[in-house]
Structures are given as structure tokens and as C-alpha cells.
Image (tube, rainbow, N blue to C red; front, side):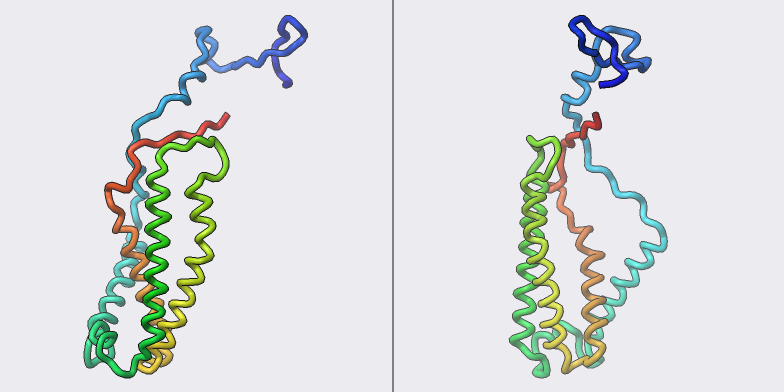
Length: 194
């Protein structure tokens, strides 16, 4: 260690040269990082009007797609009763979306239930689980998108791809609003920087 003060026995002792430590002989650092401080989850930064307009456009276009469907009946009725839809790919796509939802719920509850960590640095158990299931969630999502495209192609042809992408983006706007209050952490462990 360089910059230390000589000590008896040939070693060097590290000193703090800040005003907080010079005023008394007490080392305030020993207790500062060992206390748990109650803390509410940080609020997200305020959204700009452009972000709010984008979110509104995604939701409005998804509502338009759901309501007008194929100009004769709405999308829900089409999915239930139209004979032009290829049913096996549609059902397999729904199973893939269901698996994706189960993966996301599992990793979210695992992350929020881990309130206190024993390791100071490194990956926690829920982070390892989240990272290990990420490829599966991605593959299920891509396969489901392809299956939905194949199943709905007879109705909308080339418009199927932007239609599905619009519905996906509307879901991405809605999902962050569905956070339950019971999943929010009550305490937060601060990280030490020294």
C-alpha cells in the first residue's frame, strides 16, 4: 500500500484524510454499510410526451386491429370461428406464448422474493436462473411469432407481419403497468464502493 503512515513493526497504516474522519478518533465506516435502510422502490423517471404519444399510438393501433379484424368481424371472433385460419399452428403458437408467460412470471417472482443476498458481488441465484432461461424464452417467442404468421396468413397475407408486431408492441406497453404491489421489495441493500 502506498501513501500509508509508518507504524511500529515496519508496516504501513492506511489513513483517511477527509474532514469527517479528522474530527474524531471514531471510524464511522464500520457501521455505515452494515445497517439496512428501509427503502421504497425507486420511481421510474418521468416520461416525456413523445414516449407517451408512442405508447398511445401502439395501444390505439392494437385496439383498431382488435376491433375491426378483417372489416367484417373483430379479431377475437375471427380467431374463434374463421375457417381460413390454420388451427394447429395457431394452437401451438398459443402454447409457446403460454410457456413464455410462465417463464417470465417465474423469473419475476424469483427475483422479487430474493430480498436479502449473502454474496456481495457476483451473480445471485435468480440472476443465474434468469440468464439460463433467456434463450428458451427467446426461442419460444420467435417460434410463436412464426406459427402465428403461418396460421393467420390466409386472412391478411403480407399484412400479418406488421399486425402481429403491432400487437406485440402493445403488449410490451401494457406489461410494465401490471406490476403487483406485493412483488415490490420493501428493503434495499446498498452496495459498498470501497
